[in-house]
Amino acid sequence: MKYVSTRGQAPELTFEQAMMTGLARDGGLYLPETIPTFSAAEIAALEGLPYEEVARRVVAPFIGDSFTDAELRQAIAKAYGNFGHIARAPLVQLAPGHHLLELFHGPTLAFKDFAMQLIGQLFQIALARSGDRITIVGATSGDTGSAAIEAFKGLANVDVFILYPHGRVSEVQRRQMSTPSEANVHALAIDGHFDDAQARLKDLFNDHTFRDEVGLAGVNSINWARVLAQVVYYFTAAVSLGAPLREIDFTVPTGNFGDIFAASIAKEMGLPIGKLVIATNQNDILHRALTTGEYRTGTVEPSISPSMDIQVSSNFERALYLAYGRDAGAIRQLMDELKSGGFTISQGALRHLRETYVSGRASEEETTAMIRTIRAEAAEVICPHTAVAVKVARENLRPGVPMISLSTAHPAKFPDAVEAALGIRPPLPPHMADLFERDERITQVPNDAEALKALVRDRRRA
Ligand SMILES: *Cc1c(COP(=O)(O)O)cnc(C)c1O
Image (cartoon, rainbow, N blue to C red; front, side, top):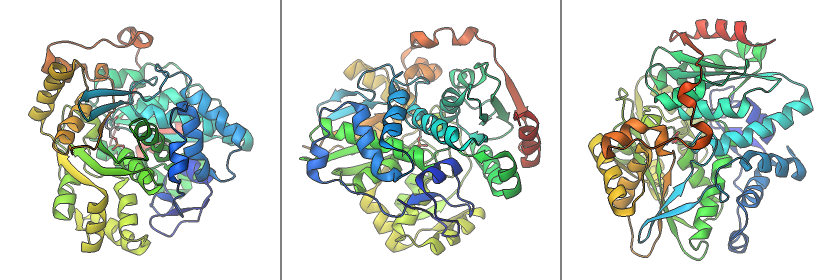
C-alpha cells in the first residue's frame, strides 16, 4: 500500500513512513493511493467480534508490510486493554432510532484515545526496530494533547511538546497535560488561539532543516494513522445495528475534520453509511462551506465546546482532494488561496461533497438546551460536543434508518458547561479522581516559530 500527498509534490511513502512523518514535505496530507473495500459478507462477519479483532481486520489492508500480523495484534491489544469498557466503544440508546456511540472510555476520556493509544504502540514498535529518536510536536484544542501525552509519556526515544491555546482549554484538559511528571513530556501554553498553535506547528514542519535535525514527527489528526484508527468504530457501531443489511446514518461533532473523514473512508470501504452529518458549533466554517460553496476563514469565537473551536479544518483538505478527483494541482491552488482568506469550491467538487456529507450547526444556547433535553428524555449526561451532534442529528432523523451520534468526550471533561446546563458537576472516574491535587508543569510560549524551535532544541534529550 502506497501513500500519496494531497499536494502531489512529496515522495510516495509506506504506511510506516507516512505515520512517522505526519505532514507531507510539500505541506500536504497523506492518503492511501487506493481505498481497500470489504464485501457485504466480510462486513457481516464482523458482527459480535471483540473490538480488537474488528480493528485488526479493518486496519490490516492499509498497512501493507509495515507491521507483521503479530505486531499489529500486540499493538491493538495493548492500545485498548486499558479502556474502561469491555466493548471499547459501546452504543447507548437515546430515543427510538437514535443512538449514542460512547467514545470516552479511554484513559483521557475523549475519543482521541482510540487513535493515540494505537499509534503510541505502533511508534514504539517502529522505533525499537530502527533505533531512531524522534521529537513529537503537536497542537491541540485540548483533547489531542492530553491523549498524546498519555500515549507517549515515559518512552525512552521520544520527546513530546504539546502546544495548546493559553486560557482556552478546560481545567481538566489542562491538568491532564500539565500533571504527568515524566521528563519527556512538555505542555506549552501558546499566546493565541488553536489556529495559531496549528499554524506554528506547520511552520516547524515546513522548516526542513529543523525537521530533520530534531526528527520531528506529527501526531495531529493530519496523521493518516490516526484517521485510520478511527475508521474502526464506525464498523463496530454500524454492524451492531444491522449493517450491512441496512443503512446507518452518523452525526459527528466536527472540528479538524479527522473523525468525520474517517467515517467517509468507512463508507468508501463498503460500509452502508447513509447520511453523514457534519455538526459544528458557532465556529461553522464547514457548515457554511457545504451550504454556500465558499470556504472562508473568520475569527474563532470561543465556545462551550472548545475542541471544535476551529476555523481551518486541516483534514478537509483530504475530502477536497477526493472531491476534486485526486487533482493535486487543484488542491495546491486552493491552499494557496486559503492563505489570503479562502476559496470557492468548484461546482463539480461541491456536488461530490454534498453526495457524501450534509451539515448543520448548534448555537451556544441550543447546545446547553440539548444537554438539558437529553438529561430529561434519556437520563443521560452528555458533554457539550456531544450535545452539538445530538442537536444536529435530531434535525436529520429518517424513518427506518438508525442514527448514531458520536459522543466524543466524557461530561466530566467539561464540567462547567454541564453544570451551567444541569446544575450538577459530573464526577471524574476513579482513575482520575485526584487530578486537581496533582502538581502542574506548564511553559508559557509566544506565538512565534523561532522561539518554539529554540525551546524544542533546548528541552529535547539529545
Ligand atoms: C477533537 C474533538 C472533536 C472534533 O474532532 P475532529 O476530528 O477534530 O473533527 C469533537 N469533540 C471532542 C470532544 C474532541 O476532542
